[in-house]
Length: 353
Image 1: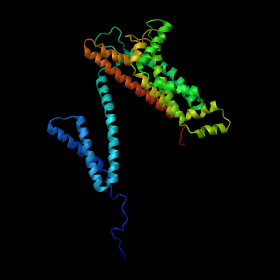
Image 2: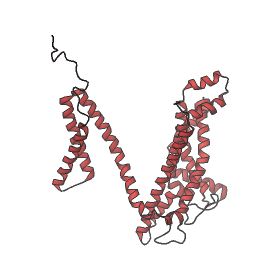
Image 3: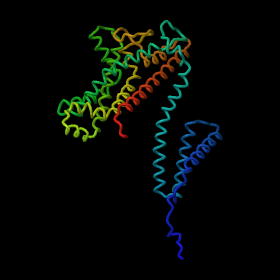
Image 4: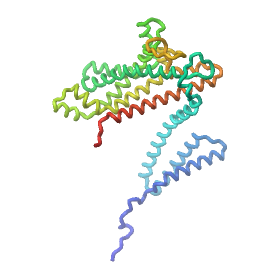
């Protein structure tokens, strides 16, 4: 009866690997060691504790992985830790910002804030309903103007464009992408002054300023999405005798619908927080204005800016309104993105049956 030697025994699939719980245990020990180090020195700080914890964790995992798994696996773990740490570092300011806005904006996040304007209000009280309505008006008009123009331009560039005209459109879209927002506001203001006379400020003028910023984002995002639609789908439609315009309408656009909606939402999020162009073109007012063609119209970014810059007495009341306006703006963007994802999910072609 023969027995297998240790060299002849089949290797276990888990041999030479760290247990799955190693990462969690080492990370916990690293955080505790870092916190103890700063506690002993009397200088606690969340950022410093996190940075030192990452360094201790990286060093410990590299040593353990080198001893148990070998150099190649240790190098792989190092790369994974570096990428994950970079992601966490990039996410940290965003999380800090959101938490700060929620904490400070919740002070005035009440019914009065959403039902009152600032008309005849000095000091405490008042609300931002006029700014919320103005933001919806201006952004809605800009979206209605920009999305059809952007979609049609992207379709032309992908499906029909060639020669000097297509190159010219691409060049001007690239130039518009880098235009400072205040220049867009000056353009819209100058345009409406030429048409309606000096001092003209309105919601439509603000929407035109946002269109200058929004159209290139829509064109670029939708153009890239249309290019990744498989050509086999187009060729199959052409083989059945479907004309090109109907192929675009019934095959290409539905296939890219989810991405198109996402691109539009990104463009809306890009412009909804702009302050400089709206301050110049749309102006500001303390009263409700439901007429986009008549008179200045307050928007949430301008409301936040004016509340911070023109602080009265007590100053804290103005700051509270500014933080509440910022929180409202973030919530509007979040709701728009969730709505866009829902639309994309409902109407995009299903890949599973």
